[in-house]
Length: 413
Image (cartoon, rainbow, N blue to C red; front, side, top):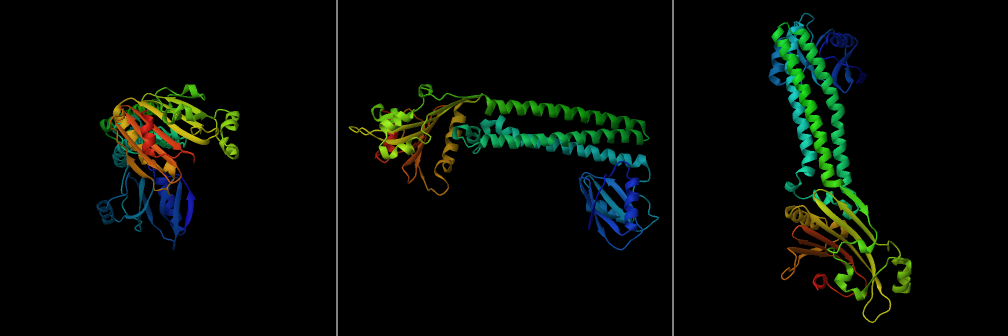
């Protein structure tokens, strides 16, 4: 087996056919061709003739049998052509003149154009629909879109993958358009019937317009989708007073008299038991991030605090990672709440068997409420009130003996 780098001209293949014949005479026979690389197998030298025919797909068995009856055996598949070989030096070529072969090229590019358009639309559908027509997408879309809440980068990974896919269409489309223009010129110059030649050129021009319009629309739609869903405006507002009043905070759940937010090391020294001070400073500063877009407004906040039991001077560290998300419509909010519960491993890890519990919302302002708790005194709530979704990941201290149900009841006091 040997590999040679070469360019095959499927429009005027005579020179390449001649080259294959010379190589066969030296014991090298074409087996396949892809992306500028031709693969040859070595065997006893033979005098044979080759014929190259443009083809979008590999020739059917019916076509091969018809060619075999004329003395031509299927030999190899190229990127967009088939190669036939004949041991009869006097075999009649598959295409006797340029005008006849031009009709083959015309059919080839007519099929290739529609295949290209179909692939183009399919790829765009796959990468744009999840972002643009977000109301109709099931699990796995909204959570990645809101990944800034979790700070795990999923949305940006998804966007990067989509951009790479879309960017891959640029060179592919450019090469194809150039190829199509060259084919149109060949067809127009080779078909003897002037009406057929004019039709070929018109078809080529229409194809160019279709691709340009489709490509422009794709970029415009993709850009609008990214902006609408994931970009908007993002800013950090790392002060506790900037947490929106609608958000659920630690002091609202456990009572302001028991909660001291650890905004500084001095507060940690003052309110955390001495042996726990070192740990209390790790990630102790509050963090609040605001993200706005065309489909939601989101606040994600990190609230480290000291929980001080009644009558005590010191307390243990308690942490709340919360979100408040106001969606464009209730359908999005319902889907988001469902997806958040499906992503419990983001908090508890794949080894935890945290049970999902549906809470009783009777007499509350919530339309749905669920929680999951692990073995490490951590619990995770997803609450929905109309178009608003709250998430609360609470890491409880040892000095707080409570249950998730009691915490949920505390939210409504």
